[in-house]
Length: 396
Image 1 (cartoon, rainbow, N blue to C red):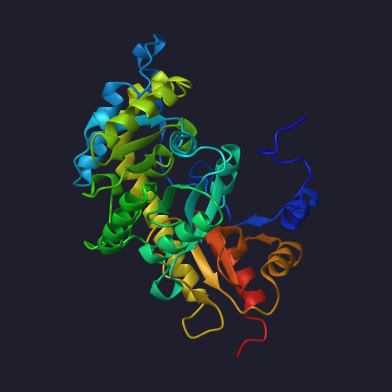
Image 2: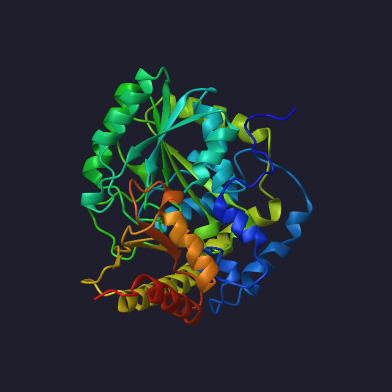
């Protein structure tokens, strides 16, 4: 009766079953919802922007209201990037933008290349569109950076398996490693995509959370020259730390006439949904004007919590904290004495502490743990103390 694209109600994941069965409270260091952590921000001004009286009328534009798309162009201008509003489309979220792009680019059974490690939501989004995911590894020795050669190898593997490659996704900066794509590798990647006839989807939701930006790294893929069709993704969820307002965007770039055809088809898809509310579009210019304040508060929290984490786990010890060049997450490399799943389950049952196992993010080997740097610093300190007690037990 049901589509194979949706999962059954049965909890097949051991960690999910353990969480469902718990009655005792636990400390959750996986929370990445900025509205559930106290950041010291008064959001009343942002919410008041939603009361614009013009929101009482409905005159939809499939691409999004022009004034809202101009606000996105202004946001990019603040990053030193020129973005024509005609190349911007608004969506209700980055997830929805992914679904539109998979509809645009891939027929059922075709392949999309995605990085590993990266966040697991891509599996669900691809599955809902009937798209096959093929992973390409990020280079661990090079700080989890993207190398175009790995993408080429994954494309070859997909072709051997009989799948046309429709697109390659890069997450820039990556989640959870925080690594960025270099301009040199981006040039190679766009040349590969142009040669093989696939598009690039550049997820840039953490653009505002690069803590040591390098001039040699790509900021906005769709603004870079090259022969490939490129779609850059962003949204209020991270930029303004306002996920509940449900607005994301796509900036398209690439050669003509391919770009115009893509925008025409993408607008047609968006017209079938018209999912972005008028009030949030009207408020967007003001929301983005206030976004740096929210980004500063989040950045301060993340960097303070990273320092606390590094104080607990010294560089020469058995547990190492990977660099956090961008994003909201920290990755710990831990001794592979037991499988990650067993370690995370024991932390939950014995320390009342929840962290992510590395395999959730497709790390290539064990053992890694991933935790959020958003929780209040006192809460994180308590969680890190519990984690250190367990991980450093018996360590020299």
